[in-house]
View 1 (cartoon, rainbow, N blue to C red):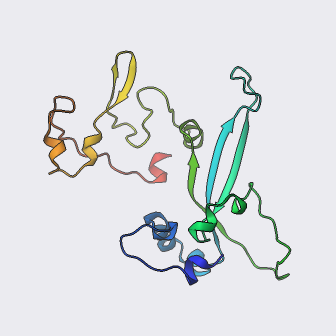
View 2 (cartoon, rainbow, N blue to C red; view 1 turned 135 degrees about the vertical axis):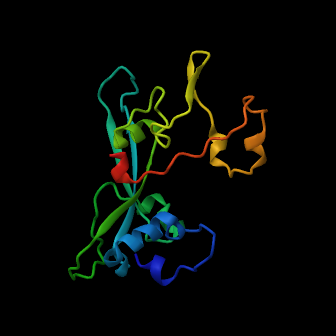
Length: 185
């Protein structure tokens, strides 16, 4: 479980492992006591709701809750044998010594409807695009709600922002301000 600290090769500007991600580095800077011990576990939460009887009218449903340990090398943490079915199990080779385990949930992996359940935000209608929150750019086309204005995420001098081929307009709007968890809740 200490591979991410002891054996990983540092690379600049290349995302080869979750430890290279901005989220991991930000978490380490916010919680240095947690980052100090490499045995502290960083987890990804994978959720998926399904109906075991394959009948959409049945109200009964199940949730698969799987935890992925990101402390392992990538070729191990993405194998099904290393997934936790929402609990930690001591192996037969446990050291027999007690230590205080700290775990942090860094990411969730889920489908869009579960995303709405976790965030308590509607994933239907005009405000379904959670990133934009109230600064949305949704409208109705032929009876369906569409989300346009994706070009506003490009740099201001990008050629596609000035192109009228997409929807007949030049994109001048800035991307929405990224909010933290406190602002969202």
